[in-house]
Length: 169
Image (cartoon, rainbow, N blue to C red; front, top):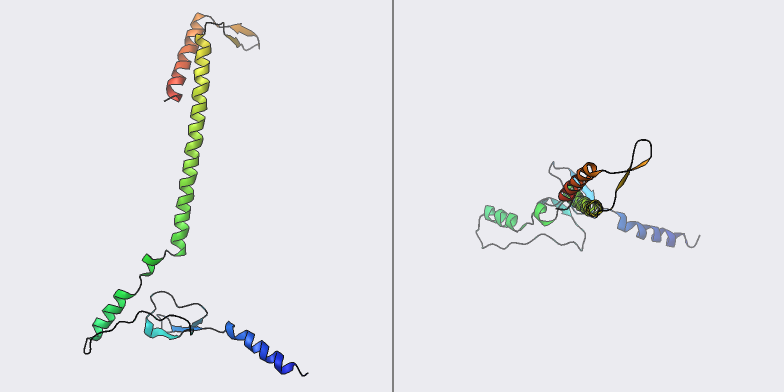
C-alpha cells in the first residue's frame, strides 16, 4: 500500500495529455472542446483556450485612432484562405479519381495501340503470303483442304489489302 499514492499520481499524470486543449465557440455560439484546433476561419475572438505551444493568428498593428473596421479588414486580408491553402478531403478524392481515370485511359490507349500493331503485322504477313505466288489452300465445310482459284485468290488479296490499310495507319 506504500506505492498507492505514487501509482495514483502516475495515473493522473498519464491522463493530463488526454484532456481537451482547444476550446472555442462555433458559428452557432456553442462552446466546443477538442484536442484538434478549431476549423479554418474561426474568428480569433471565438477561440477561448488553446494549448501553450499553439501559435496565435497574425497580429496587425494600427496607428492610434484607426477605425475598428480597418482592423477587421486588415485581419481578414491577412487570414489564410482555407480553400486556396489546402484542398479538402473531397477535392483530394476527386483529384485522385481523375488521376486514376487518366491512368486507366492511357493504359487502354497503349493496349489498343499494341493490338493495332499486332493486327497490322498479321495483315501484312497475310498479304505477303497471298502475293508470294505459292498456292494457297483453305479448309472447306467438309474439313477438306482445297486450293484457291484465281478469283478467290484475287478476292482474298483485296481483303488483305483493306486490312493492311485499316490497321497500319
